[in-house]
Image 1 (spheres, rainbow, N blue to C red):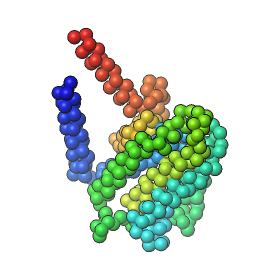
Image 2 (cartoon, helix red, strand yellow):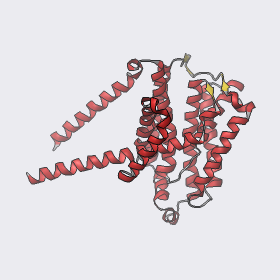
Image 3 (cartoon, rainbow, N blue to C red):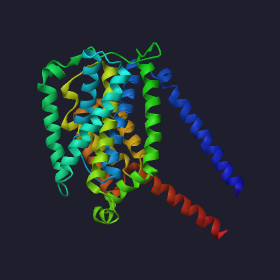
Length: 328
């Protein structure tokens, strides 16, 4: 038994090292800066999809306003760095806190609504935010957009190229993933999941559902704020057409396809679908049709997404293996 476990661990470590080596060498493997930009965008998308996971996967609440919160983080960073001469890192920290506070206040008001009316209200929030991005010209640049956002610098080193941003964003998402794993196993995470499974029973156990759901929305907002700050600094230009209702819908599609049973579903959905979009760019006009069909098929045959399907397949393999050992 011990030998089998040792062999299994050796295989897992070897696979892990291989994947890590492959990921770290992406800037050298990629054929162009454009491909590295696509990978960078997929990692930023992962952060926003992770924010959907916190709200939907852990707390059972659905939001169509994530692209709007992403935009709030991006525009806060843009204004602080260009008008108030904040360093990009300081502006990022303020963006995270500001977006989290904004989401908490909005959540505290909107979570008083019962059942699915919170979801409906986030559609209105998304429309309001996009309208502000488009028309509040002194703050957002209006239809002309917001340009001239500086890049990150750390200890005198400036992040200028796509490859340099790749390592920066990779480091950020590793830290965020570790923190998310801690949240998943914490008492706060269990409170989220208790509300998701049965809000009435959670209230009977002494969990303040209004406050807890507002905190989940604040954490979700903080992730969007971080993603917005990274995007603003990496692209150097913001347009209101980026932060739309359709984009929010796409994030929901990503988490549904990836799976809502653990944070890994956000990684599969966010990174996988962003890269898939790039591979299927010749079919761009049919993308929503493809995703729509994909969701319908997935919900019929595997409602827990790709991650849930993978886990079920692995469990079947284990069961077959154990039954073979038992018959010998």
